Image 1 (cartoon, rainbow, N blue to C red):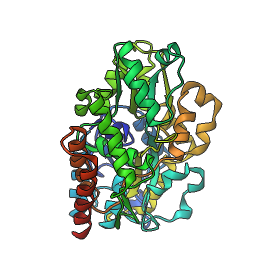
Image 2: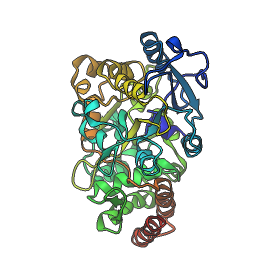
Image 3: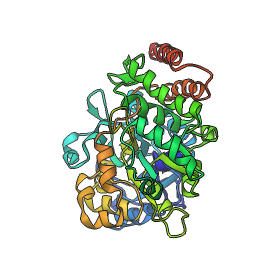
Length: 422
């Protein structure tokens, strides 16, 4: 799924996979306690920046060499394969690159081991990303890459109309409804196909209105609120009034990115990866795009945090080496390369204020603002079920089959049933 590459896109890997520990000997045939060769498992991608980092580690740590294992690019398949290995008690994986939304589930199931907070410079990270790596007050992973939703807009269209980019839902709706048709454009799109992207878009709308879906690490259902009704009403109104095209109800990240890049949309909610592709020299909208934080009811809204965390398998034979590898991949020097070579948002706060990086990645100040006000997706040991429930209800609302009022009550009942399943 592209959401993992972009909402994600933090689950990365090389194009070549070597499985297992074969060929990586240890001096004298002995390994010190907790140390030795490791396997880093991650979802597939074609970015190609990660192998040089692993080679550098291996050159410096010949007795603790890392093997990179690539799973399918589909988030669902990656999660399923990881869980299959972990449930079996296999020690095949040492370090897992997991979507931020999986941390609570994996921790509650005992599949990943708690980590010592003092081992990692968490104070140097963007503050909200650390929360994605915790469960019930304990650190179970270390943030690796982050992500936050941005509102992309056509600068040329707004400038011609003498308008500023929208800060509120009303401004967005008005401009999408009135300005877009004058230029033969559709108004606004996000990721509205029923999949993880829809959960993200709905969660952002609910939080932007001041609400939430779950609280207390998933222990309390909080979605039955005026805020949730307002968030779903905003999305439903877009479809009903025509400034969200019906076609967008079948779009994920890439379909919506392509529509904006082809010059068919005035506004787009998507992840930072879109900027480099839409601003490329051969893009039809190159030089005509801008980014601002997502709007909300009365001002800037709230994004959901994307990205991935690095965790140590509870079955790892070499957890000390695994912790060192995580420290290496989240160090400032490597994090800089995550951005410059991988085009992925780093978790180190100082990098967002580096003038040279801002010059090459002009969206960084907006992204920093969005990350600092962002929230994790609902924390729950049964997150997959929570997400499916949100998608099903939101799909009915945006297809205008159910009112937001009825839908919120239905979602609250479904989430309560999920929480009771234990």
